[in-house]
Image 1 (cartoon, rainbow, N blue to C red):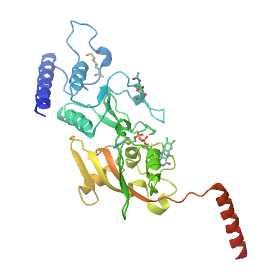
Image 2 (image 1 turned 180 degrees about the vertical axis):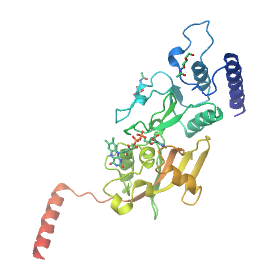
Image 3 (image 1 turned 30 degrees about the horizontal axis):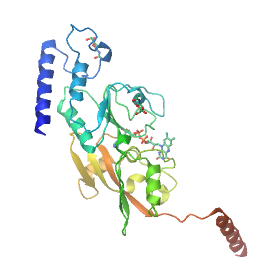
Image 4 (image 1 turned 30 degrees about the vertical axis):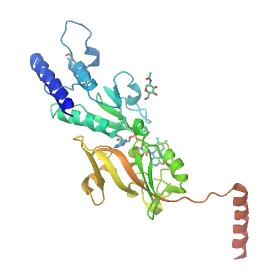
Length: 281
Ligand SMILES: Cc1cc2nc3c(=O)[nH]c(=O)nc-3n(C[C@H](O)[C@H](O)[C@H](O)COP(=O)(O)OP(=O)(O)OC[C@H]3O[C@@H](n4cnc5c(N)ncnc54)[C@H](O)[C@@H]3O)c2cc1C
Ligand SMILES: *[C@@H]1O[C@H](CO)[C@@H](O)[C@H](O)[C@H]1NC(C)=O
Ligand SMILES: *[C@@H]1O[C@H](CO)[C@@H](O)[C@H](O)[C@H]1NC(C)=O
């Protein structure tokens, strides 16, 4: 940690010295101006190259990509195209916290933005960050799912997991989430940032009504656990919050016993029985 701080102080000193020397506009987006980068060796380094350098020096278990970024400028809607300056591929929640803390510490003169990206199935650029840092949440989804199979069963799952994977894992325990989306190739964090609606919503409410607890990285980079009874403001802000109140790194999802699957032949027979019973009535 001490090493990190020293490194950060060092970077800030460089940033301040060069900023003063160049008389940079205070509100300039430090990450912009790719094309004006260090093309001429004798020219002073650009702000974006300084920021790239300082981001590169962050002590991460995962990595930041500055080159392979164009896919994060698109989403399912294909209507908006905002190129980020970097994509974070986190290996741990600490990676997300470190990066956000760093960006927060840049202060109000920096307009570098951050967006979490789940499966990119938004339609209007919600998971994009124009010249900012996009966090690839699916890269976190290697983390294990932890089950509680007691009276009120639940699963603790990474915010980057797809619902389809949660279904596969929970079925192995004879359980399923109570509330769904109809389409399952969406991430936990992505749908909990909206609402998560399906045919079961009439019975159980949307997915955001079926979460017991969240682990969130806040805008200051702190990792906070929240629920109905603990940091409730954050909990209710983040659920349905479109990623504006924090990044969901873990969610505790309510489960129920899964329905028993019926072989097709039996189904047919049941159907015949059903018809017979109801015709008799
Ligand atoms: C084909 C298709 C089918 C769909 N079916 C349904 C459906 O049946 N039911 C339904 O309710 N919706 C449905 N949707 C809508 C979908 O739920 C939302 O668009 C959802 O946001 C997409 O999830 P995602 O993982 O792709 O998130 P993204 O599009 O990547 O992100 C969505 C928003 O959430 C934020 N975000 C992403 N991850 C996190 C995180 N971990 N923490 C905090 N914020 C985060 C992003 O910054 C962004 O603002 C569908 C969309 C499509 C394209
Ligand atoms: C990029 O840099 C050029 C030259 O310094 C400047 O004129 C321009 O406004 C900058 N663009 C952005 C988006 O900041
Ligand atoms: C670029 O990123 C995409 C999405 O993360 C990945 O599938 C692809 O393999 C990457 N390509 C390279 C060359 O790293």
